[in-house]
Length: 334
Image (tube, rainbow, N blue to C red; front, side):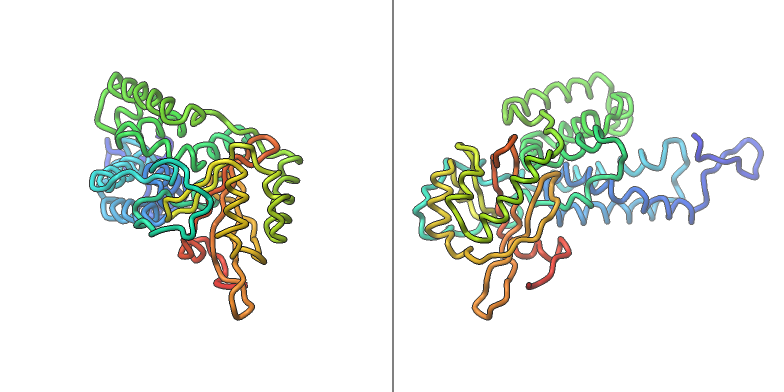
């Protein structure tokens, strides 16, 4: 391993000093965040998992013998942290996983479900690693899109780890087997079963979206104009005919642009005069929506994540968790 240097004692090798290893731990924080988020599907839980990984690694640094790379060692710790967390809870989901679409005439959203029910959005800057390779960046973005994260939740935890390590991070079967204390045959079998499950849950989960083009940038500009002016006729023309809209932490979701329009003109009309701030979330275009308050200020209301399909919007997920605004570093009011 290129990191290793010769120890002062003959016949022994030693890695970098502890101070150097501590510095290198932080170099891996973002990619570990991406890995833990794909495993867990939740922003706050990912924070805890990465921090737990770092603390465990820091405490065990004196035992790190350099037989594997520091990166591989950290992924082993992170995997164990995630598997421990996943062993004690149910899978996270999106509203479409809980039942049929809702009618657009409902007078209220119903009762919110607990935070642990839902997949949470994640800023791109915390899960995507810097790369100059457009193809590699496209794979990274595809692997954190909400639909893919939701599909991953259907996999048993170890299968989930195998698929992420093999398909997203491009580890070899031998490397994954070593990390999981398993065999190459077992890893290959788990990967095959994981692929079959994803294909059944979401046939599009393994497809790659094209990089955003000028037409889609124009589509987003039209969306901002339509939403902030609350021109619902213009907004629905931007949607695919079978578009969906959902609003975690509520189970209500809408199917088809006619129902989406009816909702916005009915119970959703309170969003008139909102302001939007552009974000990059889950490899997708997104916006922080601020709703007009009685005192004339605009207050946090939702994080809107848009899934594009060509020149149309296929899905809008309105995350109605205002606690996410601070998590995303957004202002408390406008």
